[in-house]
Amino acid sequence: MAFVQNFPFISILLSLFAGPISSVLDGKWAKRLNLFVITVIGAMSAAVLAFVIGTGQEYIFTMGHFPAPWGNEIRVGILEAAMAVFFCVIMFLCVIGGVLEREAEIEETKQNLYYIMVNLLLCSLLALIYTNDLFTAYVFVEINTISACGLIMIRQTGRTFEAATRYMIMSLLGSGLLLLGICFLYSLTGHLLMSNIKEQAAVLQASGQYHIPLLVAICLMSVGIAIKSALYPFHTWLPDAYGYSTLSSAAILSSLVSKGYIFLLVKIFYRVIGFDIIRESKVINILFVFGVAGMIMGSVNAIRENDINRMIAYSSVAQIGYIYMGFGLGTTAGMIASIYHIVSHAATKSLLFVAASGITDASGKSRDFFDLTGAGYRNKLAGAAFTVGSLSMVGFPMFSGFISKLLFAQAAMGNKHKVMITMIALAISVILNAVYFMKTVIRIYTPEKREVIMDKGFEEINAWEQPAKSTALICFIALNLFLGLLSEPVIGLIQHGLEMFD
Image (cartoon, rainbow, N blue to C red; front, side):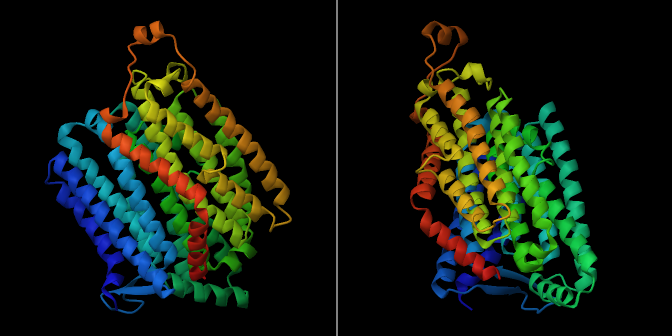
């Protein structure tokens, strides 16, 4: 075995042990350790990606060298390694982009606690990406949930306590349903390793035995993860959780946490059950209906918001709907479109949150829509970044959102029963996205009278005054342009990685 094949396991352990180490450090050193760990794990993940692309084959790392059912496995392919690299890049930019807000909003004595949660969150995301054991995945789902709650309530205000409580209640409901589904599968197959479950599930499907219990297990796991990833109408916890968290928390939660759960659902569909069985179960039809509803209703709620952070949060409900709609098409093309949208949305949503922070900094910290008038002139980089993110969400050519919508439209052509509904939903969603995003862009570039600016105490902010945030914004813009202009290699990686899932 090549040494590089140990990197996924080392990455999980490194991020796991970085949490307890951060507990004995002060906030400044805990931040340095966190950024160092993310950088090292990102580099190791890139090495693993290069190795897997070079060999053209996935591999299994058996922890402790004990075979199933006593041992536990990590399964590494192109898609897993690529997602690990991408998650590290997004998390690094989110952490540096929100450094000013963290220092202002979190007590100095509790700064290190924040980085404990970030390290544990990274650990859980990596485990969800790599694990080949279904119960291990559930354990790290719970670690992910606890870490996310910590990130929400670290500001210690009434609204964040309320948001964290609502998130915990809904998330535990989803976790409970997921655990029930795992228990059903274990009772049916006698296995917890994903590959072994898939073999037994195929036998059960072929024999016609236990058809109803298998269907129940699929439904429980799908609904459980749908709740945790805020699929409409299970999204009620999301606006407060994203809207009132500190900047880094909102960016990480919106771009990574829900995507980790969705990636686990992709693995359940392909690695645990088998996509042919999923199609035959008709569960994807239900996901399709709720996905389309989320695309529309998330945008409708965003239009009604006057708080820019909550508007961006409701937009996430709509974008999660896109992903589940792609699942619901029941085709490989639809799955590729959804996975690409996971990447696109993560890159764009974190950009929007960081850019919105820069806009509100230039507006007296006000997030009210009318106070943002002319903010694009007062903070030019944040205004440009928010415009890029908005154009991407609407689906403007050159940006990642355009490629996502194009892939969804192409995928819809492969399902004659859903093509019309998908095209109509895409058209309506694009129009609604344009209404609230372009309305905001027009607002921030509407000149405000000088005396009004002076009276409200607004100030101009240059990019060099906030070097960390400016660096994050520039990198996010570049990433969005890369995904929009050079999407073909990314789509190729997704397609090749998905083939390894079968």
